[in-house]
Image (cartoon, rainbow, N blue to C red; front, side):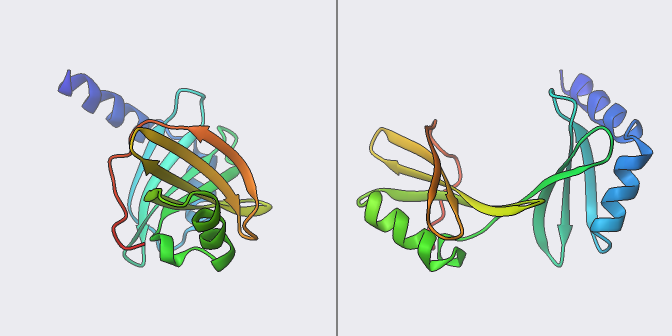
Length: 145
């Protein structure tokens, strides 16, 4: 099974559309440790580091940049985001936090947990809730909230 997964990854790395590679290199000129993988929906995910920070970008098969995600600490989110979570999810622990950049917006994906209650929150920079989804248990806890 490991060999199969390695071969699929190798296949994905070798079969990345040129337009995806070109547009990625244009947008992220100093990216290092770049790894392309094809998602089930046909989009391309690119995991990479830039200035020692880990990112994940998503591109359409036609090379259009769709989004970039970066794991951050809760204390690095805007004050409005922190206030929303503290006021509306008192007693919940922040498990993980990601900053999501899209072509026309930035939002924050926050995973909170309290006992068996787990939620994925999508919140604007201004502290407005976009979406709340029940989530499974997160594996990475952000202890530095």
